[in-house]
Image 1: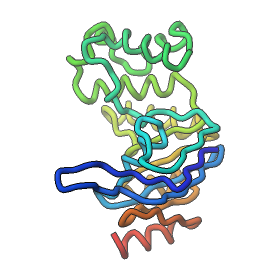
Image 2: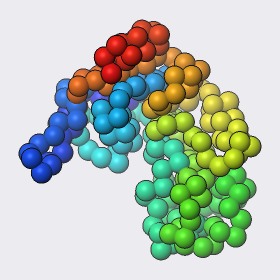
Image 3: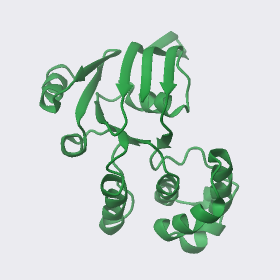
Image 4: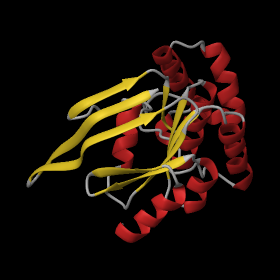
Length: 216
């Protein structure tokens, strides 16, 4: 279970304090799949980063009783001067997993070949996304965070990512941000809408989209 209680997130900006959302409550149970809707700038990606632990709330608490992934295909935590393999080793140390069990899988799945031995700063954004996604799949989590559905590489590679995440790990919890209605409808049990700093929760996905289309 992951439980967000009275969570507020604020940033200091040039004209003062910007409140992204205020007193947000959300519970994610094991195996539950939740879609997050909202217009650009509503705080969807900020919410994902808070759940992952990449950022801290300004106020409130986040209790995690499940292991949580970083946002899938997010390569922002990579050290650009290190090679892909060195970044794999570093992440394995952070998550206390054996490199010997992770590196071969990442090498095969990412299809980066010799580029795994080159500095990540030389990678294209697509190559970084491939590496990040492959590492995410190599390290098992109870809850996967998806900031926009993975669209890495060509159709064949995209389909491989979809199978790896939504078929092989269909028993895991997921929190998904997507602007594409079919992704939320296909993969989620319920949906929430971030609107004007509040999180509106709906057990029915159609009701969530009706609210979103009317207000956002």
